[in-house]
Amino acid sequence: MAVVELDGSHLRSEADVHRELARLLDFGPFYGHNLDALWDRLTTDVPRPVHLVWLHAEASRTAIGPSLDRVLKLLDDVVAWDERLDLDGGRFTYELA
Image (tube, rainbow, N blue to C red; front, side, top):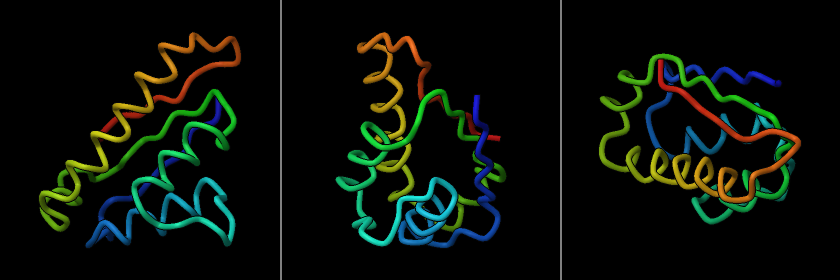
């Protein structure tokens, strides 16, 4: 299982989250840097299994504010999507640390 660590201590905006996830998960130059594009990449392009560890999540929450909830809701939706598909190759999971 691939484990990807997102360092939330330096994230100050939702745009920062998109930039860092794009870098860590190698989304390439055509990533749209929005929630729809994140959904598309996480549900179709990221090889499974993969586990995202969001380090310093509370620092991210403090800096980013309510828009972080939309990102976390999307991550929850991706987890649920993979559970419904019951993929043999593994699933997307994440944790806040």
